[in-house]
Image (cartoon, rainbow, N blue to C red; front, top):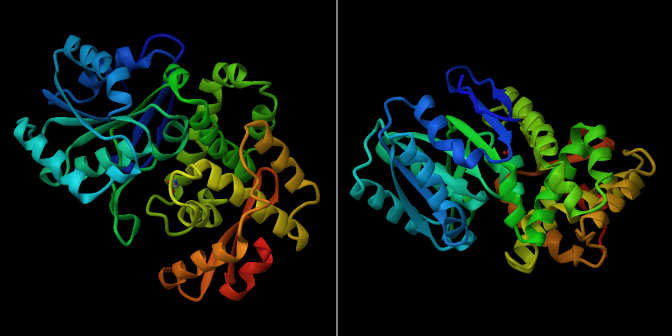
Length: 363
Ligand code: GLY
């Protein structure tokens, strides 16, 4: 067990020999070098993968911390954005890792948001059939969701995340102070996922998020909020690492959300904005059908508006249903929707496709 100094909390993800710890606190970035050296004593070289937004902000600090611990870091950057999460960029990174002389006992650190974690994690999974990697997530979305659980991937022309693996990191170092440089829209983007955890599992977390008066209050509460979200994710991943059952509850709001992202073009709505629309619209639908406690959709609406997230009352549901129907090929004749019984309790509902419109309306 490695130890950080200061007010750091840690959570364990219990997955047998693939178990790891998530460390959460302010200022962890500067201690990441010493922690990496203790965790991976055979490692000499460390390849840091980061994007063109995050590398200039934090690349140097992380390298300094690694050097101070006797490690030999080198930084590889790629152009920020989902468009970079592809086989071409992955190939270039793998070649650069080989050029940099990275061996099987060396390691990779993914420093950045969800794209970096997915791309860097997949590079670690492929390189020499798998080397150790550590997630250092810098966006709220990555800190509470994508850095935990081992889903790593790149996109194919045929769709998002179609080439990937389940490849768990050796540790996740979450420095919540890094959130202060996150553009506001992307802080709110992550809030949608935090709201999701409250909705599916933790009414107290939902109330805590609702009680944050503004962004400053949210940032102050970030270590506690991030820890609550990661604890929920860790418990779900422990029970269903390979996503064959329970892990689907993490997709609350995502089925419609993905359709929103795809239909309006990636970048028009952020991932969190799509999920916000999905959570609200599905809850409105399931409440109207009598499957969700009265008042739940109003509570979801209130919290989403607090974080300036869209509700999607004006979205083109007909077009979105058509986008979802294209996915039908991948899922068969029925679909599993995640519905809320009430705030803090979700259920999985398997439905024939023809019943889906009733849950999201046709307008
Ligand atoms: N982001 C959903 C999952 O990790 O399963």
